[in-house]
Length: 145
Image 1 (cartoon, one colour):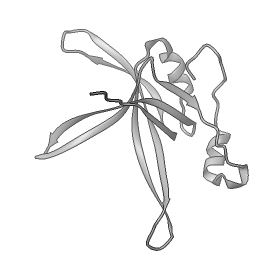
Image 2: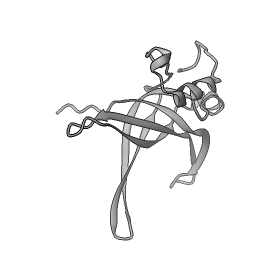
Image 3: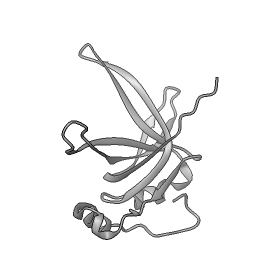
Protein backbone atom coordinates (compact mmCIF):
# COMPACT_ATOMS: atom_id res chain seq x y z
CA UNK A 1 0.00 0.00 0.00
CA UNK A 2 1.28 3.46 -0.93
CA UNK A 3 1.14 6.20 1.69
CA UNK A 4 1.93 9.87 1.34
CA UNK A 5 2.70 12.34 4.11
CA UNK A 6 3.10 15.70 2.41
CA UNK A 7 1.70 18.97 3.72
CA UNK A 8 1.63 22.55 2.42
CA UNK A 9 0.74 25.29 4.90
CA UNK A 10 0.58 29.06 4.48
CA UNK A 11 0.87 31.07 7.66
CA UNK A 12 2.52 33.88 9.55
CA UNK A 13 5.54 33.35 11.79
CA UNK A 14 4.51 34.01 15.39
CA UNK A 15 7.74 32.95 17.15
CA UNK A 16 11.25 33.63 15.83
CA UNK A 17 13.32 30.67 14.69
CA UNK A 18 15.82 29.39 17.23
CA UNK A 19 18.47 26.69 17.12
CA UNK A 20 18.00 23.98 19.75
CA UNK A 21 20.40 21.20 20.71
CA UNK A 22 19.26 18.00 22.41
CA UNK A 23 21.12 15.09 23.97
CA UNK A 24 20.44 11.72 22.36
CA UNK A 25 20.14 8.36 24.11
CA UNK A 26 23.54 7.18 22.83
CA UNK A 27 25.42 10.06 24.49
CA UNK A 28 25.66 12.26 21.41
CA UNK A 29 23.58 15.27 20.53
CA UNK A 30 21.48 16.57 17.65
CA UNK A 31 20.26 20.00 16.63
CA UNK A 32 17.27 21.45 14.84
CA UNK A 33 15.68 24.82 14.24
CA UNK A 34 12.22 25.44 15.72
CA UNK A 35 9.73 28.22 15.10
CA UNK A 36 5.97 28.65 15.30
CA UNK A 37 3.56 29.47 12.51
CA UNK A 38 0.06 30.91 12.93
CA UNK A 39 -2.34 29.42 10.40
CA UNK A 40 -5.84 30.85 10.08
CA UNK A 41 -8.68 28.99 8.38
CA UNK A 42 -11.77 30.96 7.34
CA UNK A 43 -15.13 29.74 6.06
CA UNK A 44 -18.74 30.77 5.72
CA UNK A 45 -21.13 29.17 8.23
CA UNK A 46 -23.81 27.22 6.34
CA UNK A 47 -26.55 27.94 8.87
CA UNK A 48 -26.39 31.73 9.11
CA UNK A 49 -23.94 32.82 6.40
CA UNK A 50 -21.51 34.41 8.91
CA UNK A 51 -17.80 34.29 8.25
CA UNK A 52 -15.98 32.15 10.84
CA UNK A 53 -12.29 31.65 11.48
CA UNK A 54 -10.06 29.37 13.47
CA UNK A 55 -6.42 30.01 14.40
CA UNK A 56 -3.89 27.22 14.86
CA UNK A 57 -0.33 27.44 16.10
CA UNK A 58 1.90 24.97 14.28
CA UNK A 59 5.32 24.00 15.63
CA UNK A 60 7.81 23.77 12.77
CA UNK A 61 11.00 21.73 13.09
CA UNK A 62 13.64 22.35 10.42
CA UNK A 63 16.36 19.70 10.20
CA UNK A 64 18.50 20.58 7.16
CA UNK A 65 21.80 21.47 8.88
CA UNK A 66 23.22 23.23 5.82
CA UNK A 67 20.92 26.23 6.29
CA UNK A 68 20.55 26.51 10.09
CA UNK A 69 22.24 29.92 10.31
CA UNK A 70 20.26 31.35 7.41
CA UNK A 71 16.92 30.10 8.77
CA UNK A 72 17.63 31.35 12.31
CA UNK A 73 18.60 34.80 11.01
CA UNK A 74 15.77 35.10 8.45
CA UNK A 75 12.64 33.62 10.04
CA UNK A 76 11.21 36.42 12.19
CA UNK A 77 7.79 37.28 13.63
CA UNK A 78 5.37 38.61 11.00
CA UNK A 79 6.96 36.92 7.98
CA UNK A 80 4.39 35.14 5.79
CA UNK A 81 5.59 31.70 4.62
CA UNK A 82 4.52 28.78 2.49
CA UNK A 83 5.89 25.61 4.09
CA UNK A 84 6.13 22.16 2.55
CA UNK A 85 7.02 19.20 4.73
CA UNK A 86 5.66 16.23 6.64
CA UNK A 87 3.26 16.18 9.59
CA UNK A 88 4.71 14.20 12.46
CA UNK A 89 3.26 13.51 15.86
CA UNK A 90 3.76 11.80 19.14
CA UNK A 91 1.38 10.82 21.89
CA UNK A 92 1.88 11.43 25.58
CA UNK A 93 -0.10 10.69 28.69
CA UNK A 94 -0.55 13.71 30.96
CA UNK A 95 -2.67 13.35 34.12
CA UNK A 96 -4.34 10.27 32.66
CA UNK A 97 -5.33 12.06 29.46
CA UNK A 98 -3.91 10.87 26.15
CA UNK A 99 -2.76 13.86 24.08
CA UNK A 100 -1.33 13.83 20.55
CA UNK A 101 1.10 16.60 19.63
CA UNK A 102 1.78 17.29 15.97
CA UNK A 103 4.52 19.30 14.31
CA UNK A 104 5.53 20.05 10.75
CA UNK A 105 8.92 18.54 9.96
CA UNK A 106 10.97 20.09 7.18
CA UNK A 107 14.11 18.28 6.07
CA UNK A 108 16.29 18.51 2.96
CA UNK A 109 13.35 17.50 0.74
CA UNK A 110 10.98 20.12 2.20
CA UNK A 111 10.68 23.80 1.32
CA UNK A 112 10.28 27.17 3.00
CA UNK A 113 9.10 29.88 0.62
CA UNK A 114 8.41 33.55 1.30
CA UNK A 115 4.70 33.95 0.54
CA UNK A 116 3.19 36.93 -1.24
CA UNK A 117 -0.58 37.28 -1.01
CA UNK A 118 -2.04 37.12 -4.56
CA UNK A 119 -5.07 39.28 -3.69
CA UNK A 120 -5.12 42.93 -4.71
CA UNK A 121 -3.93 45.18 -1.82
CA UNK A 122 -7.48 46.44 -1.15
CA UNK A 123 -8.58 42.87 -0.27
CA UNK A 124 -5.68 42.08 2.06
CA UNK A 125 -6.65 42.67 5.70
CA UNK A 126 -4.82 45.61 7.39
CA UNK A 127 -3.24 43.29 9.97
CA UNK A 128 -1.60 41.26 7.20
CA UNK A 129 -0.50 44.44 5.41
CA UNK A 130 1.19 45.61 8.62
CA UNK A 131 2.96 42.25 9.02
CA UNK A 132 4.08 42.31 5.38
CA UNK A 133 5.69 45.72 5.92
CA UNK A 134 7.95 44.14 8.58
CA UNK A 135 9.37 41.51 6.21
CA UNK A 136 13.15 41.66 6.15
CA UNK A 137 14.20 38.54 4.30
CA UNK A 138 16.60 38.94 1.40
CA UNK A 139 16.15 37.01 -1.84
CA UNK A 140 19.02 34.66 -2.63
CA UNK A 141 19.40 31.84 -5.13
CA UNK A 142 21.74 29.66 -3.06
CA UNK A 143 19.37 29.01 -0.16
CA UNK A 144 16.25 26.83 0.02
CA UNK A 145 13.75 29.72 0.12
